[in-house]
Length: 122
Image (cartoon, rainbow, N blue to C red; front, side, top):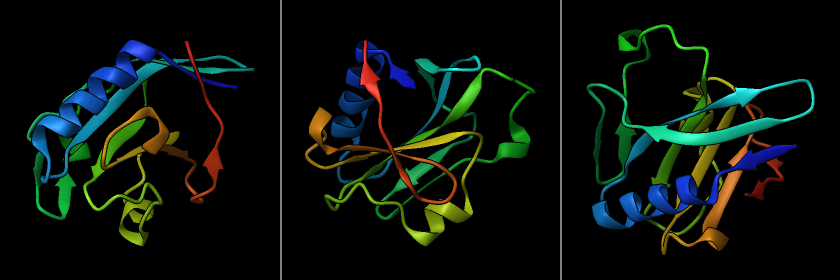
């Protein structure tokens, strides 16, 4: 089971809306146990960049942090499906994609194979 804090998701959606039409990228922080992954906060990666059609960060610039559960980024074009580039740059356990118009209904969560994952908000 994957649980995402509703406040964390709302903050990420607000950040995506505020930067539209540029893409944004964030790191997802949380905890993992045998039965569930819980995402509790988001971080702006150091030296991250975003613009029209791209968002990136340098993983080698991150400190070792085992609480990073994945990434979140925006798709201003309206589809939350991961692109081949998204999958080639997959980092950690999950990838959350927020599509315009950046509402809870326009969010997708994926594994490294691009398979959509179910999640609950808490």
